[in-house]
Amino acid sequence: MTHNIESMDNVGRFWNESVGYIIYPETFKDGNGDGVGDLLGIISELDYLRDLGVNLLWICPIFSSPMDDNGYDVSDYMTINPMYGTNEDFKKLLDEAHKRGIRIIIDFVLNHTSDEHPWFKKALEDPNSEERSYYFFRKGRREGDKILPPNNWKGFFSTSVWKQIGDSDDFYFHIFSEKMPDVDWSNPKLRQRYFDTARHYLELGVDGFRLDAVAHLAKDTSFENSSLPCDENGLCYDTDRFSNRPELFDYLHEFKREVFSKYPCFTIGEVGGGISAEKSLLFSDRETGCIDEVFNFDTAWCNGAYGSIDKKDDEIKTDVLGLKRSLKHWYDTCHARADMPLYWCNHDHPRVLSQYGSTQYRAESAKALFTTLLFMYGTPFIYQGDEIGMSNVNYTRPEDFFRDVGNKNEVASLRARGYNDEQITHYLNRVSRVNARTPMQWTRGHEAGFTEGENKTNKINDNYLEGVNVLDEMNNPWSILNFYQYAIWKRRSPEINNLIQNSRFQFLDMNHPDVVAYMHEGSENLVVIASFRPYQTYFSFYWAVRDVLLHNYADVILQDHVFTLRPFECFLLKV
Image 1: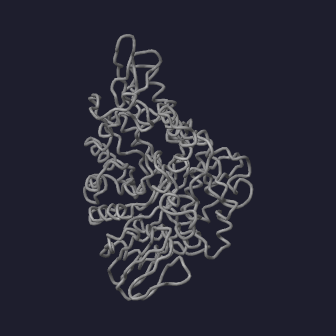
Image 2: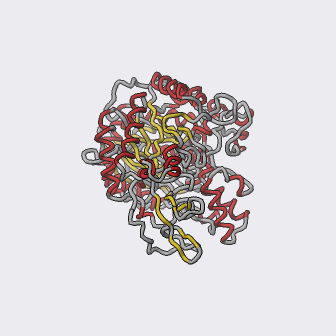
Image 3: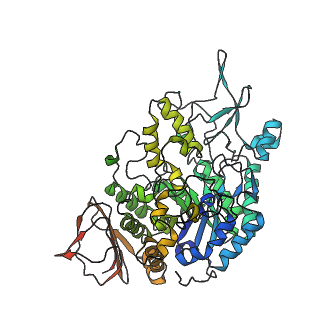
C-alpha cells in the first residue's frame, strides 16, 4: 500500500486537510516483547499508518501512571510511562512521524491526577501545603455514629464522588475512579502548572492535544445536595454539577491566550454527550472559541445499546432517523462557525462494526460505515482496528472485563440488583469499552502478531484466525483495509477535500428509515448513499450518475430512478 503524502510545510488549520487515527498504545503494537503495546511498537508501524493514508495521530495517555484507569490517572506529566518506553522513545516517535508527514496529538488529562501524583501525596501529608489547594477537600456529614460523604452526588464510575481519607472526617472529590482525585481549576497556581506542561510538549514538537474530560474542569463549589432522583444507595447522577459550567470557558480562554495561541497546534476537547450543538460553539467557534474542535457522543449510541441490559439482541437496532437528525443538527449549527471532528467510536465505546454494522456482513458494513463518515464535513478520525473490521468481544464471564475499573464497579452494582453473570456478560459484550481495548490484530500468528511475548492486556478477539487481521487484508484486493486506503486517498485529494469543506451540504431523504444519503454541491456534485440495514432496501434517486468513485458490491442495481440496495450497500458518486 503506497501513495504520496504532502509535506508538513502548510501549517494553517492543518486538521481541515487531515484524516486522523486514534491509537490506544497499550493494545496497538508491542515493540519490545513484554506483552504490552508501547511507543516502539507505534514507531514500527508508522509506515503502515502512512500508507493507510492517515496524517494525524491521536495517541491515548502515555504519561507515567499506576494504570488504575488505563493511563488516565497520571502520576507524572513530565515522564513517559515506563510500560510504554522512555522520554527518548517519545522524541523518536515525534521525529519519525514528522518525517512521514504525520502529526501527533497526545491525550492531556486536565480534570484529575492519580492519587499517586506528588501533588496529591503532598496534599494528604500537609493540609497547609500549596498542593492541598490543588484539590477539593471537604468535611463529611455526621449522622449519629456514621460519617457520610459531604453530599449525595454520584460519579461516572457508579460510586459517590467522595472518598473518605482513612477514619478522618475529611473527604476528597473525584468524578471518576477514587484513585483519580479532581483538581481545582479555580486555583490560578494549579492552572499555571498545566500551562507549563503544555508548553513543554509543544516545544518538544507535539502538534496539539486531545483534552480529556475537558467539560468537567469547573464544579458547583457549593457542593449542595442534588434534588434529582437518587439510586438505591441514595446517590444522584447530576452531571450539571460538574459539566460545562460557565467558569470552564474562562479557564480555557486563559489557556488559549497564554499557550495555545502561541503555537501552530490543534486542540480538540472531549465534551461528552451532555452539551448541545449550540453550546459547543462556546468551545470551538473560530472567532470567539477557546479550542479548535470538540468531540461529543451524540452519534455514538444511536442503537439503544447504552444501558440495555434488559433488552434482547433484536431490540438493538440503529436509529437511522435519529442519527441523521443529530448529524444534520450539528452540521447546521456549527459548520459556518466551527470546525468539527467526525468519528463513530473511540477507546471509550464499543466497536462501531458491532454497534451499527454487522459481523455477518463484516466487509460490507465496515465499508458503508466508513464511507458515510469519511465524506462528511469535518476532520475524520478512525479508531485503531476499524480499518480491518474489528468487532466486539465474546467473553464468557464478567471478570474478563475487570481490567476496566468502571466495568468492575458496574458488575458489582448489577449483581447487587439481581442480575446473574450470564446476563451481565452478555450486556458487557455489547456495551463495554473493553471491546475497543483488545489488541490490534496484525497477523494469524502468535497473539495475532501483537506481541512476540505473552499478551498481558485484554484477551484478544479470536476472529483474527478468520482473516480479521492486517496481513490477510493486505493480501486481499477487495478487503476492508484496501477499501479504507483507497477511500482515504480520495478524501484527501485537494479537489474532493475542498468540495467537502466548502460546498453546500444537504442530506437526501431525511425520512428514509434505513439509508443515510447526502450531497455536496459545488463545482462538482458529490453524493454518498449508504444502507444501514442487513437486508435489502430501496432508495429513489433522480440525478444522472456521472461516475461511481466508491462502491462495496460488484455491480449496480439502478432502474427507473430507484437503487436496489443490498445489505449495507454504499456508494460515493459524482452526479
